[in-house]
Length: 344
Image (cartoon, rainbow, N blue to C red; front, side):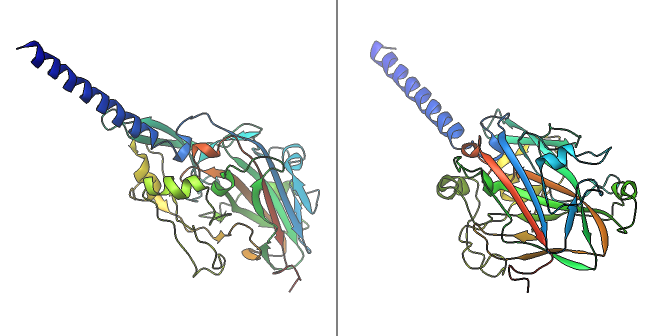
């Protein structure tokens, strides 16, 4: 072989290596979104929780001290003895299909481990059941509340209910991946002793009541790039009265339904191609950004009803992407016996 032939062979080999490196950079540069794949330890800081009751509805964290508003302090400091309230200062992403464990009365939540397929270079995912423990550590928020009414009432989620960035902080789009759920634990008479009410755990709900705020809102990155890369279609959803006609970027999402021990393709789990390990979700309430409507959320019988409340960042939502991390968000929940701001 001549020197000229040897040099040509080296040049071809070099070009192949450069091309392989280029393709590798593209592969890892375009699949770093859902579930905060770039940094598995990413957290969301400075969460504020605000739950308000109005118009004849009273709320308590211990079935003894009744108020119109509860905050982080009430949930963590003034809760009943033996509670399992979990309000961490930081949370990370989890997922659920809203199913409730019939033995514990808790909603099934799953945390993820993101890996990479060594052959294809694509991201894969496994999940494991996440547990609830009392205190200020955990991956999501979970706490008990007690609602009291003097007569049977329909309860509405008011237009003042929202998930928004904390004041004077940057809006990175994390609010669009937030979720809130209510799991009914049991019911008792208003005259019942507080200890009787706090012990309610009848496992009477097979699924949670889920609210998806900001369902029509996405960051520009999600709209222009992430949605197409994950094969997720964004579009109008004008037939739902709750959404109105401005939900231009509405999209469905798929909640994890089990612990996944063998790695599965991340994109397929997110976009619903994998129908074994995730279920298409139909939240009971979906509100658009800047919602102005009241939405019926549940019925209460006269007396006291115990609920388990969940607040989390949904990992299966395409808005749960790396650029949204490091955000400060506020959960505002206002419940009312009135169907509108005018009390009609």
